[in-house]
Image (cartoon, rainbow, N blue to C red; front, side):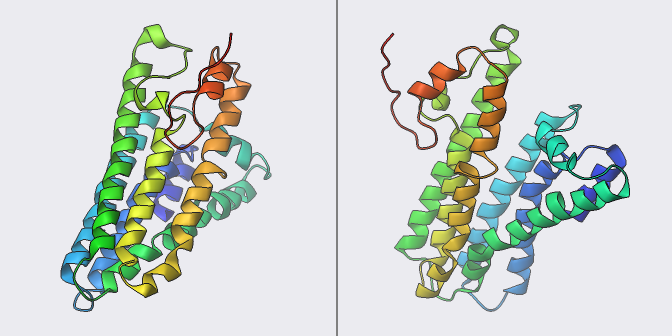
Length: 249
């Protein structure tokens, strides 16, 4: 996160912190893997580390590619406008954008760190968590690919994406993200001590569904007066994938 902060200060754009998000989780998992060597079950430690790295590296690569050449993210522009220009705004960005996200990365990663220290072989709960992680990655990766392909077609400019996974949930990527972190939590929930970290996936889910994820994005889309947005939100589930609702004319 400090590296992303240095890049943000140099370029004058702080949207790069989004691409650092997945890398930060990967760094925590790799560090935990090294520190826990010789303590927990080797198979569980390797599985937890690989699952986090696959998720984090894919997410960071996708967000970096999507943000290439774009101006500052409106979310960060509005947030940083609250502080005076100059050094005060830079310090504000460090505290609110980067250090806060670093703290969130550490807290959300606690089940992964716990799993890396757990003794004993992988049990049914851990394998169920791995399956849930795979479902989550599918929703994230496929949803992102479908949206990117839709937006790349000039004929779709200004239209609402309502195809593929986006037909069943307005945010397949956010839903997938929640599944990923509940799945990783279940790697630690094989043992009773793992349930002490249930607050981590709860917080991630809250952020995605009620905090800085879905609500912030939908406020931006609602304010853009995009044609078809109101009808899309009326018929499509806000978060959980569900069949579209039938609407009267």
